[in-house]
Length: 299
Image 1: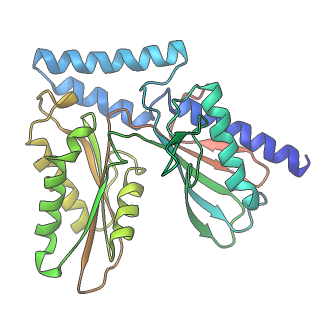
Image 2: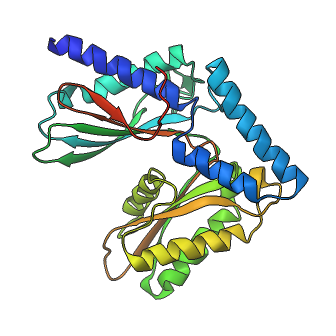
């Protein structure tokens, strides 16, 4: 296989995978929605969950996106420095989004800032967003795809707190978000919280937290306990499915953290809708791939 043939093959695979993730939610999200639906007793909440289930059934049957806002496509890459197609990835992924936009189809969501025109291809300056982590010595490429919608994770928030505010300040910031902009998203929500040494680090951590499987926990026991406490606290707000009251407000709270300067605590919050459209695919150097986010893959 020539280099050009390999790039074409990977482009086609990524285009099909992006289109597929817009139509089929990940296994963990669908399982959590089913679990939360079984806990509801109020007729309205039960009816909303039944509609969500029907939405997924029809999206699969009719081969169309499960939400009209297919978001701005974002890629989070953990790429080995010896992956043979590393240099082609930016253009390859851009072309994959263009192809997926036509084939899925995806709503046109890329507007050039200042010039104020929609490109009609879901690509533009800096879109799709690529977030890189280089892994020395490896020759594979791990890619998370994420559709960041205008009502959920795109309106994220981040702030640098003074150290005296402590983790109580982090909690207050998260809950303030949940009782304000968080309601733009469609509950039950997946809440990503990032904690680090600056506003941009915390913001990126909060987006990475949305990629973690539902039900997973931060490896630090103290952080894992904070995840549990935040989940309990947000559930007590009583948002329920679609914000119309119910027993649960969230599918989970995921925290990703890194070390910080002693004078600051950076905190970021990103919120994912119930229609949490992410995928995880890993390519080896020969472009064989595995997908662990979805057990049923049809492309």
